[in-house]
Length: 237
Image 1 (cartoon, rainbow, N blue to C red):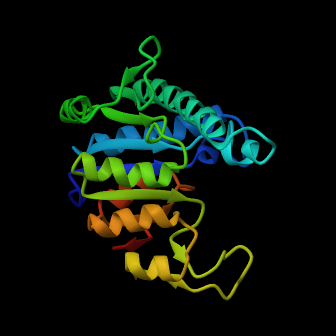
Image 2: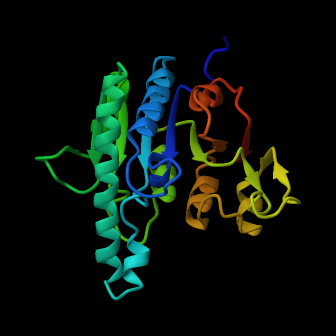
């Protein structure tokens, strides 16, 4: 078995990844599988932070289109990410690894509030750190949050989990001629307007020379495989 390629990484999961095929809500069997994968990855000695979206529960952009102010809608979406992190935290601990949820929105009766020093301390203790509530500000996606936290916490990479095995020129499920990239630069990703992450996330990653590893979360053990440099993935960097 090869040693891990990274000593510290941020894993980005979409909220939909917790809902199995339904796209909504929380599928407990899926949560348990993801938690087992995260716990196994942490047992390699890799310090792991996890940023989770909230789209399986609530989408702030969608509700803002129906008249709710965008800052309010985005804040509601941040609360959805806290719920996702809490359910993952419990599942990771059931899988045998300590975990802590840190929220960018202060809610001390629910979980600890995020700050860099606290997050670094928890990572150093080998705990999986679940980074909830995005950046704590509206208008920023959890993709951008993942890159921001990776830069703040001196991670070596962002592992972007998706439902396909890398970055394509178009949606491979809709376009059979879509080209798959093994490696592509941040600048190329921006210029080609590739949708795997938003432009702000790619731009921030480029400025901080942060590689983004895009891989499929569908298979058991996918996170550990990527950390060992064995997974089928696209490197953006």
